[in-house]
Length: 151
Image (cartoon, rainbow, N blue to C red; front, side, top):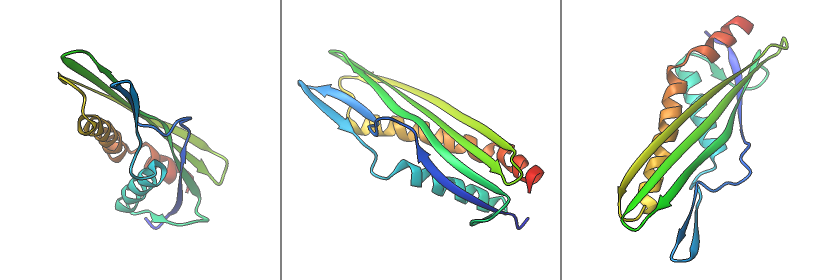
């Protein structure tokens, strides 16, 4: 293919926390171990490279991957917990000719269990929902079709 695309990331969330839990009267805030912009940018670069695109600057199409939401709502009762993780990611494709496309990827994952929601269980829920979105991006040909039409 040989088409060069530039890729950058943005995080539109107002709060970088992945989850906030009240445990024994203390607010516990879970944050990602890596900057999500770079993590998703890296994932998109790998996907585009696998499709035969070169990653660089000055190409006919610029891609921006945007984190709109990535958060786990956690509720705990006396004997049960409920974790609902949500991801909302956009890929904005901007062609040099002025054409623009926004493709949204959303996923929700819910898990319930006994006793408390451990940090590990919350992390697993967030990783699952993020993995689902990245897999959806990998399967989707919309962005690739836009690049072909505007390169």
